[in-house]
Image (cartoon, rainbow, N blue to C red; front, side, top):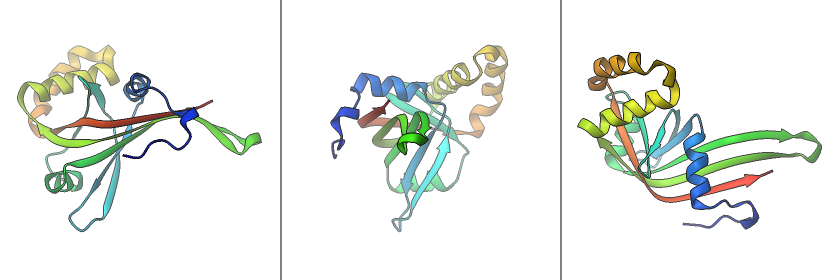
Amino acid sequence: MRNIRDMNKQVTRDEAISLLAQAEYGVLSTVDDSGQPYGVPLNFIVLDGAVYLHCGLEGHKLDNISSNHQVCFTVVATSTVVPSSFSANYESVIVFGKAHIVHDMEKVTMLKELVKKYSHEYQDKGLKVIESFKDKCTVIRIAIEHITGKRKK
């Protein structure tokens, strides 16, 4: 893996994990069998040192992951354009890792954490939705192999 070019902008691993967990959505990047890249924005959670996301039972990203587990997941935690300096202030994180489909309790735990992150005031309703939804979705775990974070303020 390459290092960040401007080391003054690099954040620690712990700061990168924290920024990652706070972000609202990220972009999952995969590659298909012919080498065509595919990036899709998704909601997600960070749990036990991994990134988790959910999707339908079939689709482009699942096809890609089934043939190539290596993925990249990117978030922009904050971003503010600074017109006077022709620049921007930002916090961003890039994760590299292997994506795998999870099942059973790991799947349900992730869905519960997703409700907690995005709809924490509707926990009871969320549990009912999970019960009816859990067999109609796929949950993917990205084991973080490498993570970098940058901050410019």
